[in-house]
Amino acid sequence: MKRILVIVAAVIFCCSTSYAQYKAVFMGDSIFDSWDSTKHGGHPEFFTKNAFLNCGKSGQVTAQMVERFERDVIANKPEVVIICGGTNDIAQNKGYVSNRQIMRNIKTMARAAEKSGIRAILCTILPASRYHWRPEIEPVAPIRDMNRRIERFARCKKRGFVDFYTPLAAADGSLPKHLSKDGVHPNSDCYDIMEAILLKAL
Image 1: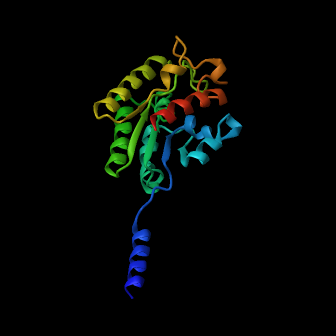
Image 2: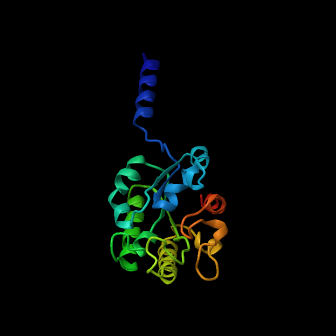
Image 3: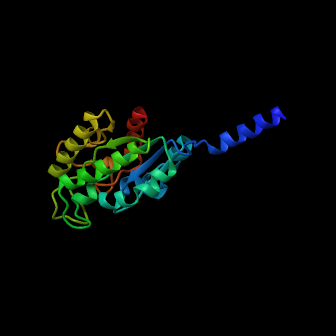
């Protein structure tokens, strides 16, 4: 009888204990969305072999990422969330948004993760000197400013921080042609570099 009770207790413990299904959830825009798509030069095997879940959504601004953060990140209970967003805000996909507001959205996601026991890793925005869908916008200075804000916020609380910008950017703030077809979205070689950088942070 005692043995049966021990077995029952063990079963109950296993059923009630939460284990992370994913080591990390990637929260972002098309930069992340394309990462697991061979059509766009991505590497789906990077996600499957590392137990990563890609929740990037093409075209989204940080306010939209905040709206789905609970569903896509908190509900999946990963060990880590990797947050990279803001370039579509700067491109004004949903109208003008100040860098201060973009940063507020990023902070909201990071703090929501931490409140749920999920480690937040914040990434710099990738370089871009021109948005082909919004050629009138000059993104170099806003991107550099946002990246300073992101790093400052990450460093002040010793949060995870990943700098994609520095190793990828040309001197003029662009994403070089050998790393991108359109100057915004990474190609396969670019994702190789990003993967090496990110794995070090994990």
